[in-house]
Length: 103
Length: 280
Image 1 (cartoon, one colour):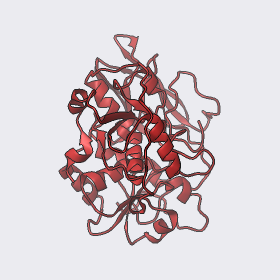
Image 2 (cartoon, chains in turn yellow, blue; image 1 turned 180 degrees about the vertical axis):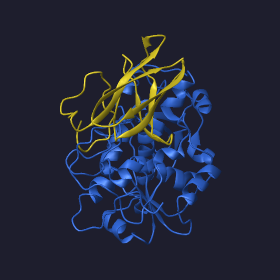
Image 3 (cartoon, chains in turn cyan, red; image 1 turned 90 degrees about the horizontal axis):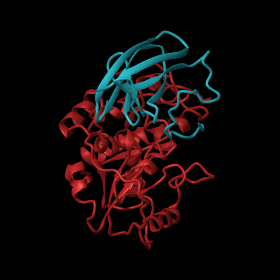
Image 4 (cartoon, chains in turn purple, cyan; image 1 turned 180 degrees about the horizontal axis):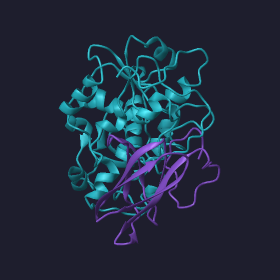
């Protein structure tokens, strides 16, 4: 990830090098449908008031990841197969796992 | 100008995939999305490697734009329909860019790639080739692009619309929440700016909200319709989306996009910076 870009970072389960989990709040996980990973879902991060914050497309394996501030978040996934959402509270730095089921 | 002049529906697009003189162009935040499947017949423009100068921080110049469009097989007489992911974030940036270089017949596919996919419309991974053209661009239109000195003098004078997320506006974050927070610069916003996150202009499926909803959104946030407006974000792309809403959909006449945006302003020496949620 370069400094000047805004390009979509690759969505993988493994964190890219240089991410300091002592400092960063990472919300990450998988989109699934009946337990099967769903790639190509539009995954949206909504803040505590329900306001849209960011959106990524899940990887082939259903993975997604956000970098956030402390607080309560909703991760909402949209897919042809259906939509779904999961709430998560991130009190401090670290990897906060989030699983979202659609369908 | 009406909404139909600047936006096409997914249905219209699907019915016009083979129409002569209509060129679909994908410009995506995820520059690899196109290769996995794109609207049949669409060509791709890579916003990072093809629209930006590789050495200086600036756009490709007029000659570079002519060369790019010629190579893509886009003619001056073609109607260009742009689309991309993430609510047309980068497609709107390209739209502004086409207007900057004087290509008037350009439209956005309402909802972009997301709505197209959610509708279950066809995608193709087949390579697309178009015959090279001899494209002629105009000089950049200074009426829609703002530079830093104009932005500094617009404080407390013009509408400044900061379209980043509330956490970026207040100074808690330096980049959108799906990107690593790696930048070393000042956080905050330009004093007197109002904060209307760009995504508020879009529905969940990526289509633009109605003009009535948009007008209310910006007025409620404190936009003075009697004043000129400058929109900015972090690197000028999300603010292209808001520029589109204000200038193309609502028809406000004097609206500029400040593409230097926060990565420039937040690194300037001596300019005022405000932190916190702002007046609104």
